[in-house]
Image (cartoon, rainbow, N blue to C red; front, side, top):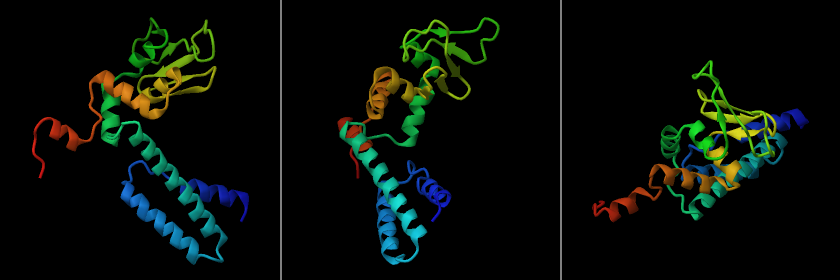
Length: 186
C-alpha cells in the first residue's frame, strides 16, 4: 500500500462522527472489528478498519470526557443555541481590544491579539459573517468556543459550560430538569 492511498484511507476513516448517536458508534466499532477478522489478506481494508476504529474510540473518549465534567447536554442544537446567543466580537471583547473601521461598520473588524504578547498593530481579524476570528501573527483562532479555550487556557467542556452559564442555559439532561420542575415523565 502506497503512502498516498494510506493517507486517503485515513482521511476517509475520520469522517465527521459528531452527529452519530453513541450506540451507533458502538455498532460500527463492532463491525470494523469483524471486518478486520474477515479481511485477512486485504491490507488496505485492514488499514481502513484500524483507522476507523481509532477515530471511533477517539470520539467516544471525547464524549466520556464531556460527561465527566458535568456537560451532559452537548447536542448540536445546544451548541448552535449558544452560538446564536453570543456574537464573536462580544466574546473577543472580554479578552482584548476590538477595532471597528470608521469607513465600514459592516465589514470585517480587527482586534489586538494578546496571545502572542503585546500587539501594537491589530493582527487579528474578526470574520463576522462566518462567526469566527483569526490571529495572523500566532495562527490561532476559531469560533466562540475556540476563542474562550485559547484566551483562558481551558478545554472544550469548560468553555461550553462557561458560555452556557453566561447566557443562562442549563446543561443538565432534560429528564433531571423535568424532575426538578416537578413534571412527571412517563
